[in-house]
Length: 477
Image 1 (cartoon, rainbow, N blue to C red):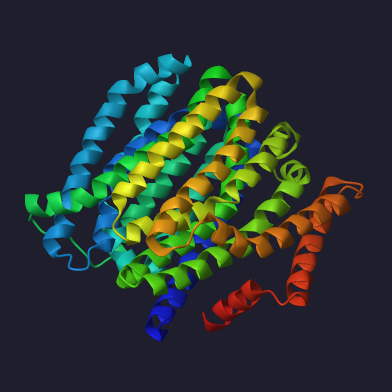
Image 2 (cartoon, rainbow, N blue to C red):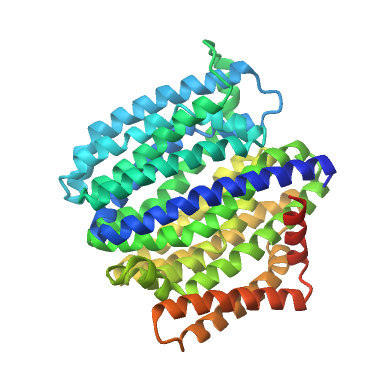
């Protein structure tokens, strides 16, 4: 990796990390405080609407942000065209969700979802105003500005959510926390970003960007529906409280994996687009990225799985205890998420959004079959189905990586094996040590300390290349 490329990557990684972990750290604390006050039913009601909002949000972006980032000769006409298209789509989708609210409430047999949907779906329209700003800041590897906006939003919206929860607002505390977070973030980005739309629009620009972005949009919609289909099924087949347990477990399992992956993806995609035609260089850089991400994520996920029971009981109280076994299983599924994302990222860098879409269709069809098979057996088997689906998806994702840069499943598994061995042995040690502790707080604290010390000692003793790479990244950042 050249020095200029390395410098941009390190700086971007630093500020992307600051934004992710400062914002998500505060959001995590806010979520814990609110969850201790509110009930699983409250979170279950919001969970029932999540899939509709997520799909609408995927349509708002329509893959245009990735298309803008990838295009090397983008113009002001391109930027403004995407901006106006997003706003129109955002308005149309809000109207659709507003009109469909009674049907959604009838589907779940929850009348209060009508008003909840009509309010929370405003997030789709609000977010359409900053898709271009975020894309342009990402192109510049400017995560410092995004960090300022996100941190401001989470502080003020967190205060709103906690106050409303304490005052007994119930599910409305969650809704207003999410809406105020998004609205403040949008206002802050408009203030901090220098870009403003011009009164220009080009159908030629739209067609060019859409030809690439539309396939990503369809892929994103398929992925979004699939990732949230469990919320639909659980909300329909089981009780609202069961959906609440699942959403808490899913959020905890997703937190470390998706944030670290998000940091790497946001930084690597615009940087690697500049070397998209140098296959040997791409291969070398990608190997470093997925090894480093696994070295960080694997121990976090397996450590969390080992300490799931004391973690849930200490942070969320006894009323959330059923989330613990779900969290353990979901950690095993989510630990592979960074590797999925990095493989798919390569297809975008190489401009193969057609292959991206093809893979998504295949994987999701397999996932739906697994879901249908596990539904009759209950919530826990459904979560095990996600683990099986994750592993199968990993094998499928590496198929085209092999064809494009000769980096297939067996090679990647060989690269990841050291991190997997370190993390697995650490997880078993943590689980064994914590089992002898007399109370949940000691189980959690002793388990965390034991896991960190063991992982550092074993990786230093074996002279782990990934540890050396991480230390260089921190030192040079």
